[in-house]
Image (cartoon, rainbow, N blue to C red; front, side):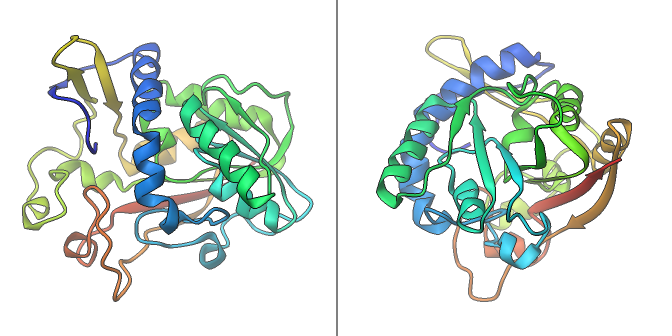
Length: 269
């Protein structure tokens, strides 16, 4: 929720279509700043699961990707997929933001390591059944989806039997706290069980410009089970010593006391 135009905040139900109409253009507006601010931290071919800097090389949650067909949902500029390709995986990207995909193409050219990518949504993946061995989302894509059941079911559809699914999200307990990297961000101000979406409305136009959805840890567990997944991992990275980066509401002040990111790993069937 960084550097948005003047907005008013609402808490109300939001449909999948309205979420998509808001968040796609929002990421188009924000993409240049995002890549300028965070690109060096992410790396052109780097796989970071969240602001703590916890990497896939450390986590190993995808397993050996060499020779595997891999889909990244919410691929942004393709940094994580490029890391997968550098290790022998056949990675492909999908993102809702055209501008993010333009940045992906730019880095493809600069590095000579290309990630074939498409414009699309997690709730209607443009791929055939059983196309991939691994599907992942690194930090953020799924909390912008209203119809999460369809998104996870789509992942199950495009995965092969026994395929791996992994994703990172803002840790659900963060929903209780203000999105503030300082001391004020340590005081709970709303219910963990209040799943009413956070909505920003552009003051000038009255158009919804940003939507974020919340699910509890129990919601995620139940949803994965309903869609045929067996959970294999739930990682909550600790804030590393000496890591002084501030990213939105993430900081050492908060990160040394409470988790900011949750990483799920699961197997289909």
